[in-house]
Length: 113
Image 1 (cartoon, rainbow, N blue to C red):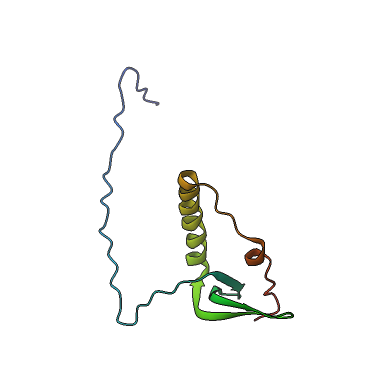
Image 2 (image 1 turned 90 degrees about the vertical axis):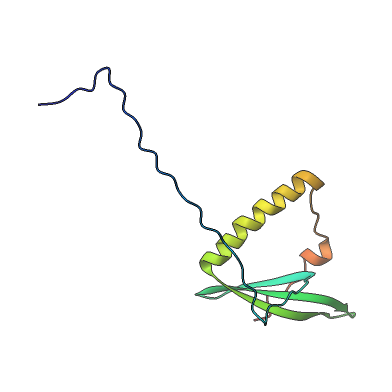
């Protein structure tokens, strides 16, 4: 036998999700690195972002100084992509499009491992 709920309103169950406080504890080896370019590679288990600075050019060679390497899990890399995309969009909406000059964009680092 079916029961009908005619004329009666059903109250939704509301649960409160309590947000946890998040903090960041910087270790004694914490450092900041400024980069003017990046070189990104992928292994089967992670993404690697090499932080580059100080481009030196000769007639037949471009040399960067590498100041660090960030190794990210696949999930951390995806979170970085989504978060960075959102932050760049917010910045560009407020300040205008970020343009990447041709020299920075067209450096071929594919032969480096």
